[in-house]
Figure 1 (spheres, rainbow, N blue to C red):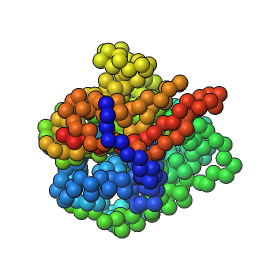
Figure 2 (cartoon, rainbow, N blue to C red):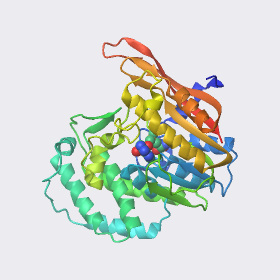
Figure 3 (cartoon, helix red, strand yellow):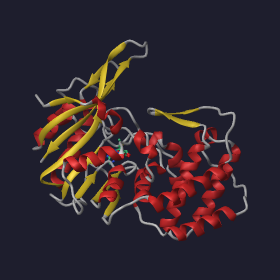
Length: 376
Ligand SMILES: C[S@@+](CC[C@H](N)C(=O)[O-])C[C@H]1O[C@@H](n2cnc3c(N)ncnc32)[C@H](O)[C@@H]1O
């Protein structure tokens, strides 16, 4: 299929999370796979969204689309299958009573440390932290669990998750968690305190407008809780083909704070089920997992089409997949599927590219990350 294709590599950084690091609230949790506030703002302008418009992100991750909507007074709905993502999105987009938070913070940091048992924690979690750091994390988790107001409790839990990551020896390397021994690991308490202080300061300076924001734990393939033709725009980025297993990459956070300890077979929920029929995509010369990915993305695109209002815009940030020996042109295949569903494909903009090599460092090809513009 022929599409209008543009190369705009100056947009590259905008489709990554990196620029968010310097933005208050956006940076309350480092979500490596996210896109940036300014990308979303650019889409709002391009689609001429105004206060009161409705926008959907069916793979909302750390809530970038929702938070940007809040800044603009645009109403938004976010959906994600991972409890951690839903939690982060909610905490970043709620309204708070800062004085109440300050008084709870004073109480938390006045508590005397009591060591708790580390029994039952997985080997991964035990490798990721020193015994002292883990004891501190569990102690503060216990203190926070006593807070009655769930909004306040969640605010401090997010601060603790971020503080825990700062004293962790684990780091996320693409799709896997690696452990790196550190000579000097600062104690958790002052870091946690500093993060709480920063979050409280952010709340004082961050300017938002009145809007409705809803975040659902759900599956982008089945948005039956959303009505037909309700959204003016969709701004989203699905899991990339065969790369990130979100549940696994965030396994430490998921175990320590969400009691989620089973990760086998939870691969990102898109392209997971290779038992279910994917023969519609047999024309693609790719392994079953790739065909299952497109079968699932077809369901997602159908749902996106259904909930979008007539003439509504949808934008999808997605990368080309790298199977062992070949590059799969995901943005083009998704465009073909979108077209078959009834979308108009406005254009495909390549924003990033990288050289991909195999295990022997032989070049496989160039994989691009692109922005697909669709219209209902
Ligand atoms: C590329 S990330 C989105 C990042 C987001 N744009 C941000 O700025 O933080 C993809 C997200 O899709 C979620 N996900 C995977 N499968 C899903 C499904 N079937 N339904 C909804 N969300 C899903 C993952 O948990 C992950 O948070």
